[in-house]
Length: 569
Image (tube, rainbow, N blue to C red; front, side):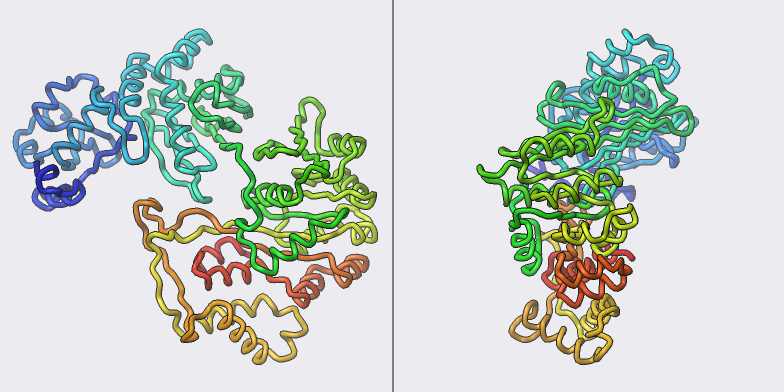
């Protein structure tokens, strides 16, 4: 009544109830898993009339949700039902209490703010309870029994996890069972960080893992060895996505499952990749050349494939034949001929590249150059009139050169072939809805100038006169990033509903672009050390990953904490 007639928000009412009863407020969560063990002898009519319901069991004890904690504690009814358990009381509004009962016992198919289908989950939980999916039962089950369980409502739990993770923008789903009676933790990786999603009761542990194995056609009886497979989710749910699945046996006789969401999508245009003006102009100029070798390097998950596909989109036109070898093919675009690596069938990167050279290519993109043979074919292809793109797992652009030379590449051929190397990282982007601005103090700017210039210690320019170089850099920053009062605005994370209280939403690319100029080629032929290559590149205007990140801090896109986190030495 208060909510409808006086427009009181539910969180405000919850806060008032918490203050009045002196116990924590528990908001309604549509993704809450039904605690089957706690509810097995409790009918809905009984808990509804008593205005209390158990919602969870943790190390602290059994959590009781109620609308009137004083009355329930005084009656000692709950103590009689759970005599051996410590009780933790939490309070909520009448509306949230009814929603929780609907979720647990079936009723209104209410949808939470995250889009989780509560009605589906309640019916799915009821069916899982009837399966009696206890550890001992499932482990001794036949394949037919497991298939029958999978055909029932268990599928809704798995589908819900996948759909929710996709809608949240997550890249990976981690299913982490614990031995014994402990719950199975499900976490998702969003914007590079893992966050808790839900906990599943231990009774569903084996059924959940078995269901996933069935979906990707793995051996359900093999629990001692790692397995990997792929789920084409279109066969099971409403989304046209694929998931790469890895199962790993872990301590306690359980199996972890990690799923990477391969959302097939359109490549981003180059202008949306977050390149600085210098890098954007140089990349467009470099990749427009008719032949040569261009690398994108960085650790796993740093956006290398996304960047390469954006570059291919830029040069993709009807008079260009483009072949790609990828593992897996994540991004598809019209006009590209894309090949999926299949090592079981003997189709590795080197084999596919040799086939490409017989297939009249203009451009070849190789997902990864990890061995001498693949790199040799790439250099050979680039010297015979083809434009070759590839990714490398290296930390920085100058280090990539030494890594390739250490593989045994001829420095003269490699120097001739090299067009450029782009090193990349992904940092967290500040949430545009809640980031808090402040005018940077003189000390903050001085500290940033010192840190920025610390990246330039190898250059002869910097060694000659640091004071002049710092002043010149400061004036350049004033021109590019300051307001009319010569003041800089920096931002700090706050946290809101849209960014799940983290202060960050989305990612921003940090880039280090080394171009294969004549001085760089000469240094490669002389087998120069990384420090010498870095000095030459910096002299020619290259910005290191940290410098590029610091410029994005001054633009208000991210903050120094994120830049330092991804630009480690």
